[in-house]
Image (cartoon, rainbow, N blue to C red; front, side, top):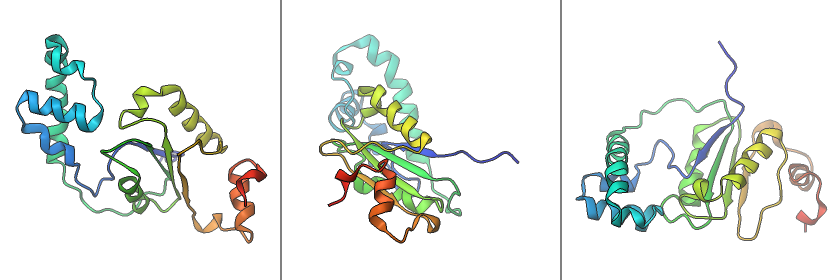
Length: 179
């Protein structure tokens, strides 16, 4: 009976209806598994050469990937919570096209934001991620940086008679957005 969340943030993750390609690596031998994590997901190369780090992280990573590999999507009605999907501009594993799939899982509006970085953009730029989350929760939206993408999928009540005014309102009325 409690109110739902204000927003759902999906950071660098495939939408629930999509298989996670990297999960197929869960059963590879250690060296091949680590190689895939470094090459595809941006894991630290030290993982290859530091036995203590390997011993600590491999069981956890394998358990996570095995769970993801076993996951089966069960279609359900979309959420009544807005979804904000975040990804790194250079994420080769879960990019913009993948994150657009989150839009089908909400009836309350969808936003896609890219940020500098790769798949581990949250780890690489925690202050930037915190600023984006804070801005979204406050309803303010900074202008996109160079190479970044911001996309809104509006709900019925978001449609304005003047679409330029609606975009400007999203960006705190900064007129340099419109052209």
